[in-house]
Length: 111
Image 1 (cartoon, one colour):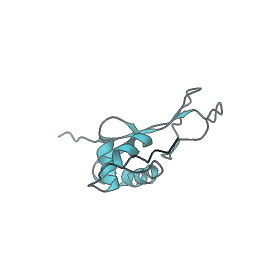
Image 2 (cartoon, rainbow, N blue to C red):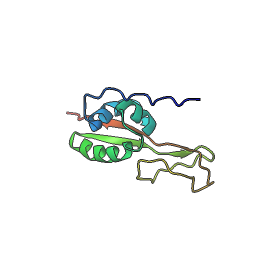
Image 3 (cartoon, one colour):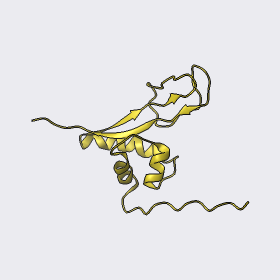
Image 4 (spheres, rainbow, N blue to C red):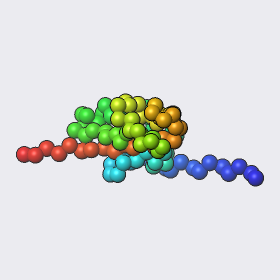
């Protein structure tokens, strides 16, 4: 079977981080979802998220991370600070890990 050419990336009129910011508003999304929405490779997403997390603080927003979770034993990687999915579960050694999901929370000021 001949290999299919890769799907073209969506047109990008904004910077990669601006595209990620737009994609992160609303429901939580995984790196794979963000990759498709922002037109970036999955491997690029974590480094952009690290930078975006810092710049969001100046805007009064914050990056919320739903931690990765083992699909075999339900272990939650709540103390993990990296934005990538772990390779194996430390409890049961299963490689079946649900990736972390991200979204932006906008802080509202009362007054």
